[in-house]
Amino acid sequence: MTKKITPDPPTVRNALSMADRAMYLRKVSDEPSTEPTPEDTPRLLDTLAFTCSKPVIPEAPYKPTLFAIQPGINAQDALTYVSNLLETAELNGDEISLHTNPVERALFWGMLHSVEVARAVVDALLDGSRASDSASPTSES
Image (cartoon, rainbow, N blue to C red; front, top):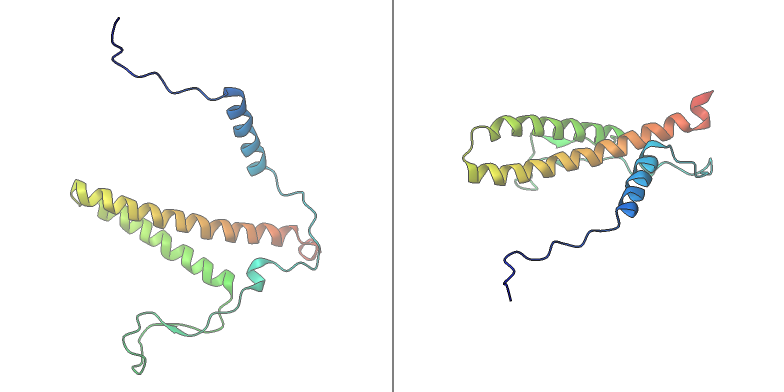
């Protein structure tokens, strides 16, 4: 009897189901939502409260702070600003990562990936908000 040196290859999933899944995901992402939405349903960004005043770097509650979040900013404007901050962090991170050693670079790329994903989520929320604005009956008038 001969010994087998390599293990059995992994079982192959049904290729047809993977292709069907890929086609479905492509179709869902390319088509606008066709689900009826009531006209009186508020947008998510409109249901969020406005910002309140908050120090950026709180040192002590009794000391005045140099930088603070201003009160009364709506969610869409705040998310747009967050997206811009995350974009700046991505650009700076790309430059900084070129000057680190391999171990630090791996850690840094993990952190940078988190920033990129956070920005993608914020941008997706903003894009969804803009899409719902253009689809609303009041914007067609």
